[in-house]
Image (cartoon, rainbow, N blue to C red):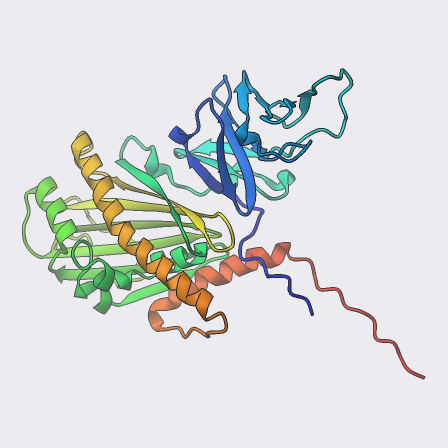
Length: 370
């Protein structure tokens, strides 16, 4: 019987490995898609990512040190350059030509360090997900990294269905309107979108505070949530509220209308999420909240980052409890509701990428008996 576990994530994809500020001229170890890697910033500012295991006796290179732009193993002193090639061995002048460790394609974009754990020949930087709001001068914001003890797909599920805001985040961003509003789910070859428009509603506490601070407005609002998933693991959410009836929701539009209304009498945010599998059951959750109002208020940036961190902590508790329950009931079958449409499409798109990398099952010929 074949007990090999089916992969849950593709390797031929860009994954966020760190925030740019995390990677300095020092060794940083992290596990990405079951690959143990060590990262460091070279003297020219570029980032190198190597397999975190010495060719000689497999001690993690992250336990060594940097000398210039080379890594010195902390066990026997083998030295590796940024390409992973051994440049020095103790007590010998001749270097074994096989002495190297894997180096990974790496890119720095939108304040993240991205690595490609799959086939290096396929590592096209054009495939890096668009998270430009994270460093766009027209937006201000910040974020954090959470390492969550759950399958990364559970985080994607959570983000693709914001109905849970009513019940998990009722003291901040949730209210009954989110659970009761109609929505439209759509999908493409690599993306899935869920759109919710909520007209003439009471603003939840978070958004009531934001529109009063930025616009001096109190009263009913029109609210929008446009969730966009890009396979395998990035979700951006266009969110905000505006004065009710001010045109933020296009006249005569419905939840699936692609038009953007007049948001000038409102406040707009972008919730940026990219979730990187650490192992099969843990993940690195990189998030940021960017806004296009009150751009010069650094204090507000800090308050929003900490406030959103508190909200996401509520998600973390739910997701880790869910993972524990799944582990205890591995044969349980889940049933889907209408609200699961976005997460179902996201999972199908992930599965499609995984299937492209899965070799076909070997079929043994049937021996004919005479």
